[in-house]
Amino acid sequence: MSQLVTGRTGDWEVVIGLEVHAQVSSKAKLFSGASASFGAAPNAHVSLVDAAMPGMLPVINRECVYQAIRTGLGLKAQINLTSVFDRKNYFYADLPQGYQISQFKHPIVGEGVLRIVLADGSTRDIGIERLHLEQDAGKSMHDQHPSKSYIDLNRTGVALMEIVSRPDMRSAAEAAAYVRKLRSILRYLGTCDGNMEEGSLRADVNVSVRRPGDALGTRTETKNLNSLRFIQQAIDYEVARQIELIEDGGTVDQETRLFDTNSGTTRTMRSKEDAHDYRYFPDPDLLPLTVTQAEVDELAAALPELPDDIRDRLINDYGLSPYDASVITEERETAAYYEAASAGQDRKLVANWMTVELFGALNKSGQSLGDCKVSPEMLAGLVGLISDGTISGRIAKDVFADMFESGKDAAAIVDEKGLKQLSDSGAIEALIDTVIAGNMDKFEEYRGGKDKLFGFFVGQVMKQSGGQANPGMVNQILKAKLDG
Amino acid sequence: MSVDKSTVAKIARLARLNVPQDRLQPVASELNGILDWIAELNEVPTDNVEPLASVTGHALPMRNDMVTDGDCVDTVLANVPEGASGFFVVPKVVE
Image (cartoon, rainbow over all chains, first blue to last red; front, top):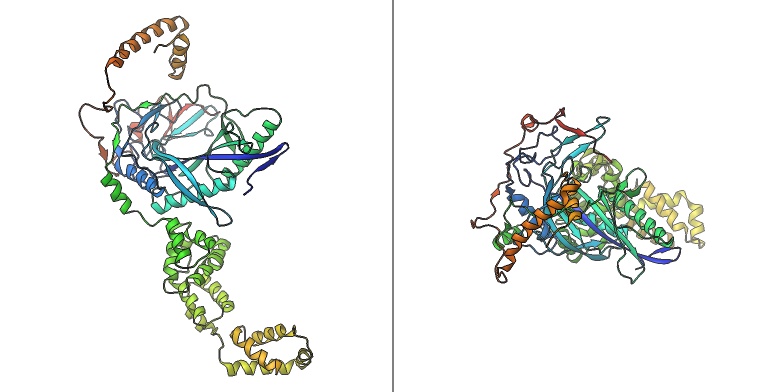
């Protein structure tokens, strides 16, 4: 339970809330017909609406609205049938309108909940305060010219979902688990690709500290973190900084901070006076956004099975451990792979082979499940050979390694290499007789009471058989022979 | 509701408008005139009236998720004071 941080003057409780910006998966932008895809030539995906030319009017993309609703449903949240777009006013070179169209007072999605899984397999519910739709800004490049900035508006107007949590997290690890889980849900739903390197998912972290039981402390907001590692580093740094500051008699300023990815530290953004005075007001270009309950119901009916539901099913119906079930359901692709590979097989054995051997080999080779040669059917084939006693678990590891490299079927590899498990009791007896005959001294010692030598004999027999003897049968027959 | 000189100065700064010192008081008076006029609406009883966003009764029009625009960088950049390699070029704005 103790998530408290010990300072010089006693214990501190850390309070964390996250604002995650998730780029909506859509073909076109939120309010224009320009492409929302990543990686085009500068300003190629820009319409006159995005460039904020005079007289241009925004027209909302229905699919972006539906994606926000799907995400809200995935977060078990309230869907607001009426929501309102506001203008958030500020000046910056990559914001040609001079305001961002966002939702302030009336977001499309209200309160929800997200269940995180902690390292020990236990779960915790983190409150979602709201989700709203807004426009992304453009991109400024400052390193192309000594005294100029270069502006690319390709991102301008791409739809974002800002997902705001309650200040319910108490450690950097919980914050990371929250983002991981949110990303997983978004990817299951297909509402955001979750690609943190390309900036499709980024987080602002609000951190404060307090004495256990006290009211909330003053928080700082660290902006624009685009990896789980950076999120944890920024939190750890802020917690240490704030505790030291307070213990030295200072106070925390409510401010926006920037994270330096090289040093792992945060610093004050050069204070922009009035930076937070955005003068929100309803955008007069846009009527309130209304959707019908029928539309929401239709979207709800078409949602895929979500990771929490699959996880519960794997635990309750298939008998998997909470840990294996969490690992397998984190990615939609992995869960689908597991379902295909384990159908008609020993479910727990398949889970075991996936999480240990398959994931181990993928990690080691740097491959993803998508480009792996081992199809679900091939893994099922291997596990089938273990289950019916054709090969031992030990041999199966070699077969798997071969299969991973060559992409051949387990059965073909077993045939080709003659790896079938030796389960003929006569043949095993003959092997054992040979081994005993060759080690009469050890045999006498065993008979003389040195029980530990049993392991030596098992090893020798297995070696003689090239690892193919059925270990259970070897144990049984050997015991009988040695004990006479 | 009324605004004073310092509020006018703040709003002007936020809107990047240059309002000279000697104009602050006159602008404040003008704005207060407008605010007083609009405040007359407070006399209308609206307790049981739904907020009205439009008098036309139209719903927010929507577009389908199709790429129908863009790929017009020359048009987009037609009026820029300075451009290079397809970018807008502005005085350096980095911190």
